[in-house]
Image (cartoon, rainbow, N blue to C red; front, side):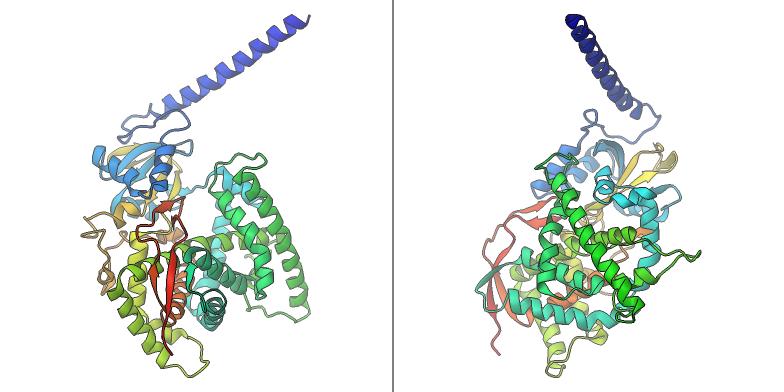
Amino acid sequence: MEPLFLTLLLALFVSSVTVSLFLVFYNHRSQNSYPNLPPGKLGLPYVGESFEFFSNGWKGHPEKFIFDRIAKYSSQVFKTNLLGEPAAVLCGAAGNKFLFSNENKLVVAWWPDSVNKIFPSSLQTSSKEEAKKMRKLLPLFMKPEALQRYIGIMDTVAQRHFASGWENKEQVLVFPLAKNYTFSLACRLFLSIDDPSHVARFSDPFQLLAAGIISIPIDLPGTPFHRGIKASNFIRTELLAIIRQRNKDLAEGKASPTQDILSHMLLTCDENGKCMNELDIADKILGLLVGGHDTASGACTFIVKYLAELPHIYDEVYKEQMEIAKSKTPGELLNWGDIQKMKYSWNVACEVMRISPPLQGGFREALNDFIFNGFTIPKGWKLYWSANSTHKNPVYFPEPEKFDPARFEGNGPAPYTFVPFGGGPRMCPGKEYARLEILVFMHNLVKRFRFDKLIQDEKIVVNPLPIPEKGLPVRLHPHKA
């Protein structure tokens, strides 16, 4: 009896493997069966070209994947397979314009399943629906008029950050410090958490969560993804306690309805008078902490890198910022008028984000079959736009490797060519917030120090955000009082 059972079990196993392989290869072949698909190749079943896509970033040249295929197939669109999904990569300003202009018409945002597993409450509806809710909610808090009153708080947080992490040090690691700055600022402005020990309680689990989002989604003990899920659960529990206490404080008049984005979320209801539940708010705060942290800390890090490499650029930034600093009375904080004077500094920041875009690109999903540039894009295919397809393209930015803040003077670059924050309805709603935190960082940095890189040819890796491989160590030279 036992040999017969084992034979049947073996037959069942072989059959299941055969069916699975058939489905994989059938789906892979069917992805190629549409007429007039864009040129390119899908690579191996499921794996596709994902490894080459990521490995170019690990080697510090994320644009190579894009430009190799532009040269080989098409300057406008090519097909590939990324993250197990057939995808069309739309290139150049025309591709950016098409995707950004057809949001919720021909395309919708798409995230890998790992995102929904890290943020599980989104599954009550869908990550797409949750994103729509956020985009209605955030502009009320993130618009320039609303953010103006927080500039003084940003300056206070920045002064404390430089006093504790930079001053009286001969050398520092910039990237970890930049992450500490942006995370502390997010905790203060989103949650009114000001105690450094309370911020530190969030910080380590938050780094594990951020790493888990961009990892291979294998939920086994010891994997980054597993650690990310555990970290997200820990942070969510902490956030729920903060949310419940804030609800109580608002009811008792101990908290202000306008003090931060948490109060704003708790008191904002939809057109039917329904407010968000606590778990949804916890997830949205979690998403904001992710979105307002990694990209801005990367931008601040690369600003230090380029200011160290280019003394003439540093001198112009220093001159602009010191004119503002000298106009202030002792103890007076930065204000909206000061930010408006930082035009050259912002041009420098924009040129940094052009050369090293913190957001490399983004995915969409085709709602129906459609035609782009004469090629068929099937329903369900993923679409990818790449910042580097314009940022590093000499058609849009002559001598693209040259650092030139003058590109952003006057009317600046042509539409849909400079896209560090995306574009269209899905343009990053935190763009103005990022501008303020970056400029406040630059002001407090250059008025205190000059600095030299300690590793002149430090490798840049992209995984998926660009970061200096060794964290950008610099030697500090404080200005004499």
